[in-house]
Image 1 (cartoon, rainbow, N blue to C red):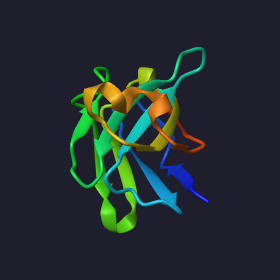
Image 2: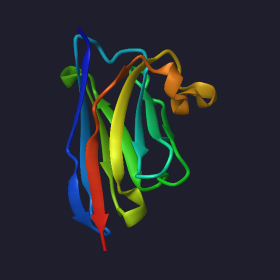
Image 3: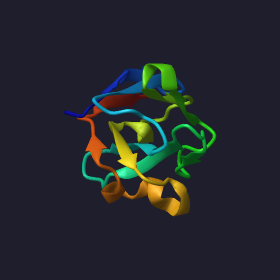
Image 4: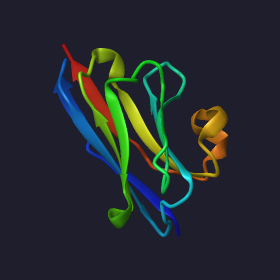
Length: 127
């Protein structure tokens, strides 16, 4: 049984940083696209960042480019999302998704491309 678990969320002040982790069990993060998405209350879920594991190609949403970094640790079967210079607009439930065949062509942002989803971790940024 595949399980995807996110951790690392919490409450921070404006300008602060958090690092989210996404760990999979029963599934290997290798040669597939892993993405981070977020959803704020009353808003649609949006793609934040994606990474093609094994190759390292990364992709970012316009609102986070330059502030967030997605990375992988193959030995730990873990994908990270380093979030810096956080703003209240970054407050949301953050979800990790895995199992998309490709990240390219914008597919990293397409929710239906992913086979496995975590339950989410909450990020709250206060001013």
